[in-house]
Amino acid sequence: MSPLGAAPADLAAVENIVRAAGTSFYRGMAVLPPDRRHAMYAIYAFCRIVDDIADEEGTLAEKRAGLNAWRRHVVGLYHAEAHDPVTRVLVLAVRRYDLLQDDFLAVIDGMQMDAETVIVAPDLETLDLYCDRVAGAVGRLSVRAFGDSSQTADVVAHALGRALQLTNILRDIKEDADRGRVYLPREFLEDAGIPLSAEAVLTSSALPVVCKRVAAFAHQHFRTARQAMAECDRKAMKPARLMGATYAAILTELEKSGWRDLSTRVSLSKPQKLWLLLRYGLG
Image 1 (cartoon, helix red, strand yellow):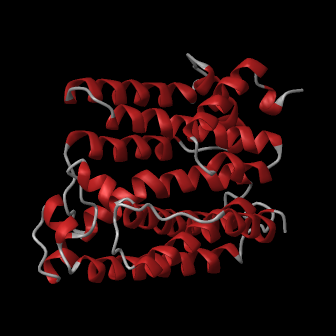
Image 2: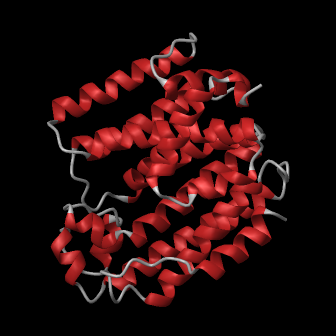
């Protein structure tokens, strides 16, 4: 039988969405058994689709319509309703791993935050809400697909989601600013005397001070996630350990760079990636 009992053509279509995204996620999920791996592919494909709706060209009305359509699709999952390969595989994943409707809807809410406004220097409370929606909710879906639906696994999702999202924010400062967006917290920018605009963030000599404060927050969340993982099902947490270790390594490289050259995207070398896979993915 094929993974999740899904049609092979549907599995292939979903996997192609993940592969086409060109991220390390595709390789990282290889550590999972086929059923769980394809559930994660479907979760990722859903996230990719709604993110594209929020980010691509279009009017606000068009984006709202697209996101609302996916809200209806999510509700339909819990009535075994599907309309394409992604939703057909998700129906099976929802049933198999008890994925929660509220988490799918939270992801869409996070994408709507991006769609409805150009986010510039959110306050810490709003930034935390954004991180919970676009990353924490994905984490809660993921830990269930990984094989642990305990409250402690949700602690992992809460902390690791924030750690990963803050690391992404620190890595994508220029890319975001080029689109007029600033996800660095308002309070930190004001403390550093940086005006609340994308242009000011890119040109301020005080930016590294702000980035170091955000990095300290991310490290704190990484520590909380690692502590919670130690109390969870070890096998189920293997992908979470690999993702956490990978992003923690990226954060360390960002700190080494000192955010002096924002035009160069920080990434890990092939030997670093291989070492992390051997230690956390295969161990």
